[in-house]
Length: 144
Image (cartoon, rainbow, N blue to C red; front, top):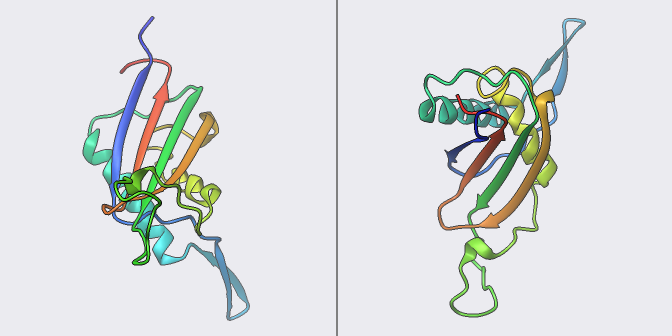
């Protein structure tokens, strides 16, 4: 039996929540599309994973646990209580919603795992940081 494996990678730049698909009617046909900002961030997430694990074979059996920590740029008026407080310890309680950040893991289908239905546990944290990024940790049953 192999030891549980943990994959860690960082998606640089400000975290982006998955936006709702938009629909338009053009010449009597309905067309659905993902907004550009969401699609670009999903692509960046895939590229970040593949860049760190270029020869990784997608996980094909669960359970998989995912931990996401989204670090947002603090506002200019950011004044945490206590002068030596690390902003990365301060919870971010503004939009976007944590559940919409979690939906971005759909972009890892076929790259990190066969399908996100294998994910049984998800933890999402939102924090402030002077270096905006998204840190993702994937835990699964066996080493590869």
